[in-house]
Amino acid sequence: MSIYYFAYGSNMLSERMVERIPEAKIAGIARLYGWDLVWDKISKDGSGKANLREENGKVVWGVVYIIPKSRMPDLDKVEDGYQRIKVEVECDKNGKLAAYTYVSEKRDANLLPYDWYKDLVLKGAKEHSLPSAYIEKIARIESQSDNRKAAGETP
Image (cartoon, rainbow, N blue to C red; front, side, top):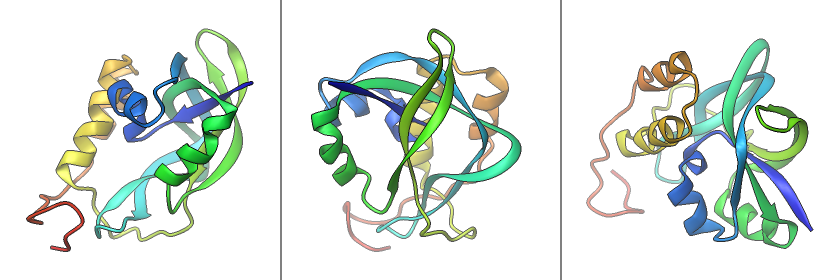
């Protein structure tokens, strides 16, 4: 059995998603109405990661993947610090779909994403040809350099 997964952050980038869940197949791009893309999830590395905030009138664009339901625990581990929720997205190819996505309540609006992380999100948005205005919105997000010497090291 398979499920739909709505990726709005770095997992939009197919290469990254397939590294995490090799069986992932792209179902198409989609819109999530009533939510906004924010960068306030508190990461272990001290930066901000992509997150969702409920907000009327806003839309988050992303990529819908089809993945085996049996792989959801693996995705849950990768998405540590987020909670899996069920949402309804509107997919360009398949209309309205029930999908899973991730939201974190561990928030700090003062955090900035690292440049490399924002670039992953931006590359995924470009790869899937999300609307140009949405790509520009991501590109305009303020970010910071990652001055750690090695992954996992605090700055």
